[in-house]
Image (cartoon, rainbow, N blue to C red; front, side, top):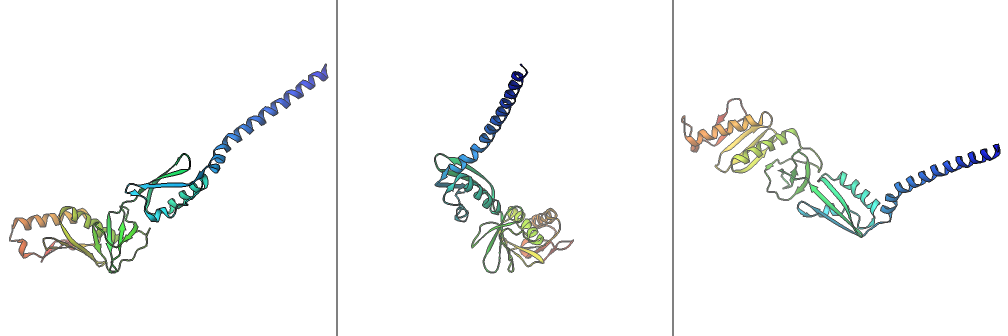
Length: 240
């Protein structure tokens, strides 16, 4: 009788071990299924679009033409994380063998042109995201400007661009020029506004607006036709 009880107890223990092992195997199998499936899915086509349409050639060239889903997706994520032009991206699988990629490209808002006629396109954070041979963005000529893609521009250049952006919003601009010491902006009216490369942007712009409005009103003996420069580099604005 005791032997029969021991046999039943031993059988029960073996049964419990078998159940535990079975559950573990099932859990492992469930976790492995996605990895195995991703390895088995073959990608033969990649569709890449951004907010501007089909992806730029420089971005497309970083994407492998084919491979399994898992490795291809991992490779793309690694490449895109290093790409200074990409803000965010979304990767989706389309049956049977297509990978759809949607990219949000960083938008340049300024440009700096050097003496070699290279335009450095700059985003809102002051980072150079690309270069071009022409640009319609608010631009400053800086003859000795030399930047690499991904590099942040200097504080002085960023200050000059902030001034340029606000001035271009208020008035029509012919061109802007910086020599590292000051910013000169030539307005379409023929006036030249001169700014320092540090200070309070809003105060400087407010001073320019005040002087410009008085020039247009021809008050206090100040006449538009007699003025060629508005110099805001000093505590007291100088008119020439």
